Length: 530
Image (cartoon, rainbow, N blue to C red; front, top):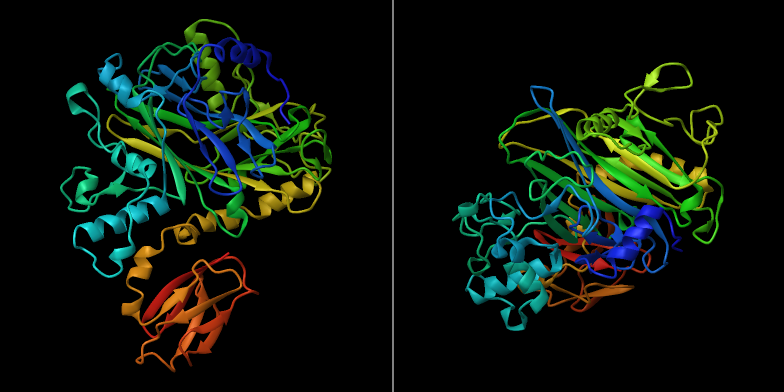
């Protein structure tokens, strides 16, 4: 349930929602429904003034009120630069579109303002098959192939692969598959977007199109920020997760000898007024949990834990950021920079209870009464924000740096702190998962490409997806009598049997939902069990 919170945000919404409607899309391809906006803050339903990261999907309960990237840099002269997210039609340091010399031009505005691209793997697969059939690259099974729907075609043809170099934009923008290797994105030539996940959104932003009115620090860095937010629909805990890939390009003239990138998350675990937070620096994660075992007017008994894992970049610091006090732009920049480096805004260090300075606040295990947690420290529960930052990186002109974040959810049946322990114990699983080809588990990916060549492989499977059983038909004489094996994606054999007759029915009612591979000799076909 949503609670009116943060007076300055509430007043902002009251004023601006009467005047503006912010363009945003919903990414809800698994058990999470996430609002995505190119405003500079995401996971917030700006149009309604509500939290915008619902999990479980359809529950009306959210774990995040909003999130935004934080960037800081220092050049060889010691000058500091700060870029923070913002709110739609309100103070911001980041703006829609690539770095350009034509921000006020109508062509630029129409192309880039408030744009979030959304596309799913199933739509891309269907487009690929449709193009191959229409261009004579594939003949078998093409009589049943139809074009993707108009929304999918628009997303594919409008994919922001290139910028306008005549107005200073980079030619290379969003990633794509170049079918004929001519260096130009053209779906008519068989090109298509490259995404991660079963469904993804893509945004391009910059920090140079306007004044830095959110941080009130004036100077832009000349950075361009590309963000892909994506989800997988699986039969395991990945189904409760969302991933964020962020790449920062330095399009300016200044080399940054110290560049910091991070993520600020305003977590609201149902009822926002009774939350705690902490971190595990050894696993590069910050997390949020309920201060007691009952979340009033929210998740209620055994409330969940929320984790954000920094996958590519180590966790260099974690804290609950304090508000930046009024001052000159130079003073404000220094306060931000102090926090980005794990210090308090005034430049002093956080001190661990054992007496040494630390960059990691509440780094103890909340299930251990003697560890340094928010509860042990007597920290008041309430509305919690967490700031996780990378180490100092080198970002020269023309170079880029990147990171991947995994937003994970744990409610495995324990109490509020046991869910934290379960989340931390599961982090190796998430790290291993992102190293595998999870796209194979996209249960709604278009199957026609496999089905079109199934007869050539000696058999046909139906229905696909299956629930309790599937049938093997059109078995050719060359494979009749051979052994068939059904394997999971790890290669483990789960069912083994001989092909003894046409239209042979296979019982899979006891198998877990997911993707399996049926192999007969050299022929392999994918089957989805749901």
